[in-house]
Length: 78
Length: 204
Image (cartoon, rainbow over all chains, first blue to last red; front, side):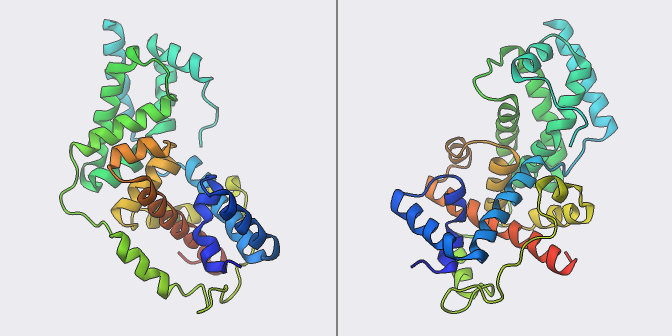
């Protein structure tokens, strides 16, 4: 049986469907009986979704205005 | 998060090619953050802003040639990564894969036999939307993202923040798929721990 430590080390490959068939079976068996690892896999997924939607850095007004100007200049030449 | 979702990809690109400056502004505000994360992790904090600005200018000049073979966001992220790579930071805080293995032995979450030492509690804040709405938590995530070793920071920004596929990432970073997977997991695992600790203790 996989240890918890080895199970969570495969968390990313499990979520991204990169595990071989037998590794996946082994991992699923562990997850069936281990609530802590089950929670971990769920939390890892929540973390990934959070990162994909997060807004960590907004552009300054000045940057936006400068880019809009650039965009309009280039667009008008097309 | 923006108030309103962007139009579907086809319409989005078509309108951007046709001088829709209102939509362009929304696109800038939507994708700037992810582009900044990529620029920061590859080129370093000092010139990240500059790199993103240059990436936008390259994109503006190339948008009429964009054929939609990838999502617009992926295209922007690739342009940013390439722009950043040409200005790659000199001093590097990369941690070798061997050093990662050393952490394995000292991971205090687990007993010697590899069981959870103190269990793994459920999170109070658990849906991605609630996680995103918790400002202090987001500040904490942001703070720890930039503390990741360079190679982990690059890969988590390209993959999870930027949404690129692993093949593209391996090409950009010139690393093997198996190294990329190890680095991505170390980075995600670290961020899971940051969120878990914040939820347990309220501290960053």
